[in-house]
Amino acid sequence: MTVAIEMGQTSGGGAATLDLEELLATRLLVQGNSGSGKSHLLRRLLEQSAPWVQQAIIDPEGDFVTLAERFGHLAIDAEAHTERGLQVAGERARMHRVSTVLNLEGLDAENQMRRAAAFLDGMFNTPRDHWYPMLVVVDEAQLFAPAVAGEVSDDARKLSLGAMTNLMCRGRKRGLAGVIATQRLAKLAKNVAAEASNFLMGRTFLDIDMARAADLLGMERRQAEAFRDLERGQFMALGPALSRRPLGLRIGATETHPRNASPKLMPLPEAALEDARAVILAAPPPDAIGARPQRRQPAPDLLSQLMAAKTAAIDASPEPEAAPLTEEQLAERRERLDRILRAILAEPDAGFRAIGVLYQEFIVRCRIEGLAATIPDMIEFRRMLTHARAGLTAEMAADGGWQDVTLRASILPDDMQGVFMMIARAAKEGWPCPGDAAIARAYGTHSLRRARRLLTYIEEQGLIVCQFDGTGRRTVTLVELAWATAPGDPNAAEEMPADIEYRAAPA
Image (tube, rainbow, N blue to C red):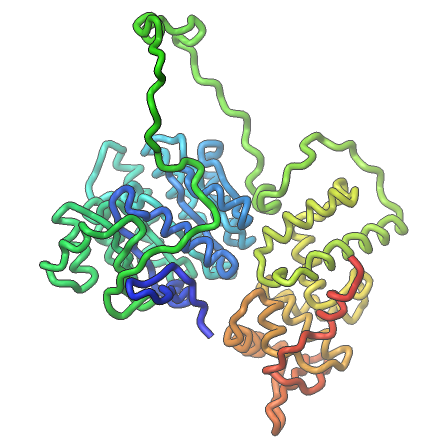
């Protein structure tokens, strides 16, 4: 089963879909003049794919920071951080799989290029163990990969162009899928644009841009005039993730909106200023003459921001240092944290929400329960979530047998460990082997095919052995521990007993 992202409607009235898995294996180029609906298209793509894949947005105008509240993206104010800080932040964002928006608003062109290049380099140079699939969206890409030298320094241009070239030319093998949007193809470096395999072309008026768009879509030159007639939100699509032939489509509505709406006409004030010249041309205040701009306050550590994934700042005041907890208090704390986590996982869509969103809700509930002083950090929360998805309480996870399971699970990527431990618990309890639907849900995907590939990957690591009997039922045995599940139907729709236990547990 492929993941089809609904982008809107085709010109024939049908659903216009984008194959997300195919997009991750290729790249996307979006072109359209100002006002053609490029940013709206990118927002629709980001909203629809947010539950499925990690995202990073290079945002020169601060239009996409509103995704943070609705989808849990971490908004990073680039002006508040150094280039080195942003490079490290890009690497940590990939390692912890946190979706981010790099807000470059307020910076001049050269500093936008330098900071964007540093952030992209951090993601690109992440160690191989963390090459998870990631959608990297660059709005106004002609600013970061210009076709000709501009007023910025050669050093800044080379840094930015090199980072964009790495993203589009070498990023695929590292899990980075570039999505770039530009107002004019003629202003975008050809070696960056040429790597895209999917195209969405919107309204444009200049002959050179219309001709180039027609060439990319395989249209005849005489058909290029059609790009002038496209309305706002209408695009011509082509590519393996979109359509094998040029296809007209209209982008659908979005859940979030940019902070700055399109300007609207409004009447001028009826009463004119009594003395406009005296007011407008008055001398500036004395303290503003020659005053140096105030330095910004030091930015908080980006690692803390990434771990918190934009946690709700309900109580900003510092809390007094708490006394060490007794064993009874620690046990009570673990039980209360388990109860909060069970309540979150009992929600129907919890298995498909980003970990940053889950952590944000977890922190809010902990504060409501009076546990603000002992909230686990992101690393501990990931471990708790892994155990919870396997149906383990804190006491069960501390058992000696489970320590062996945890040690074996540690060789897997973080997002796979919960699936392995869920299977391990089913084997230990003698329950039927989880079906593909239960495995997919524990992994945070709707794709049953991905769930089957996941089992194959875990088996290739030498952790499990999968066997099928004559009726097609599956048994999974844990290597070395010799725990085996009861035979289970891979196509079973019912939930795992551990899942039922969590849904039935009191919140």
